[in-house]
Image 1 (tube, rainbow, N blue to C red):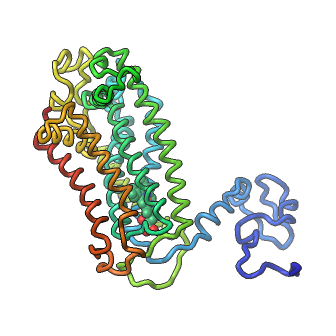
Image 2 (image 1 turned 180 degrees about the horizontal axis):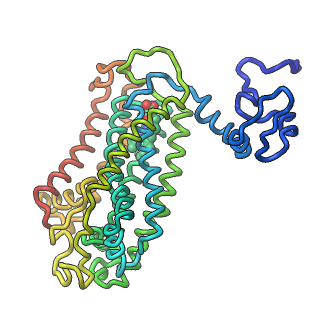
Image 3 (image 1 turned 135 degrees about the horizontal axis):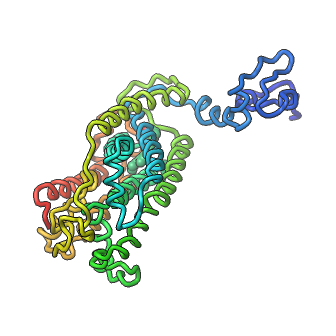
Length: 415
Ligand code: HEM
């Protein structure tokens, strides 16, 4: 059928809907930033003019204003996923600021951290960066469990869950590389354990990475720089890419409905949801900021390869000296202790490797073993163990591994 040319058909998006400029407006508006209007048209404000120049109107229209979501998803359990993204954004921001002061050199990194923590302004930025990492870890766990209970990974949404599992692995990797950069004895433990692992699998020569060689400061520098590159470039870039994919897939595959609410059939613009992110995110990160101002930390003991360290010349490595990782990743050292005590496995770094394999493996397998063929409509369906028993078993194994590691680390840290 020929186009009658008498206006848009039902369901068609007009350029005006999408926030784009009509051809006649384009020529009449007089170029970049112009606030002039054609006769009969309202005058375009300065900001509106510039937003138009950079295509923000169309972008915001497509991604936010014209993106409709079920009204029920404006619930805290769905909003926390966005708060998590805000937290990651704040980590990027504070991380960029820290780049201006931190020195990734094994002879200077510890002193550099000490200086940051001694300065009033920098210590707030570094503390905020550090405490926010804890909040992110907690939010990943809460978000993952919300999605798991909602079984929001069936059918075409398996890939979305797998991207999420990739994000969780990246958050863990960013935490562990960040801990290294602190470069106290705790940070020093990371390249030390990587060396032990490469020796255990016979690849230490290929990677030129023997753990004892780290006692030489120049050699340690060549490894510290790898963690620096991973922490400030490689992992954030991967994280950003996966986040974009995560959001794209959520939009494409549609968000689930919170089964614990009565469906109303109402929809709201995504901008309403973003307001929730800002309110909850604002409250949570304001508290983190206050904590960062009030509770400043010390730099910890210097790494054992520096003469100023209380452990300089020690016979044991960081584990043997009772140095343990910070809480979100403390399960790694706990798993090392667990396999050494229970299975007499040496070197004990196998504990971390086994723990990682179990945790990542369970996450990857979950959407494939869950036999609930649709998203649940009630608590009863959500906890239907006949259909979801194996999936529940796997998520339990994930938590048991983390809890065994965390508790073992707390009970028997030295070794
Ligand atoms: C690490 C950073 C992550 C960020 C910033 C993030 C962000 C989000 C956001 C904003 C949503 C929309 C709804 C909601 O918030 O609940 C969402 C949904 C989803 N996320 Fe994540 N997520 C992350 C990690 C994960 C992880 C670890 C998993 C699972 C292993 C996961 C799996 C999913 C799935 C399957 C959905 C769709 C849920 C539904 O339809 O109800 N995400 N994510």
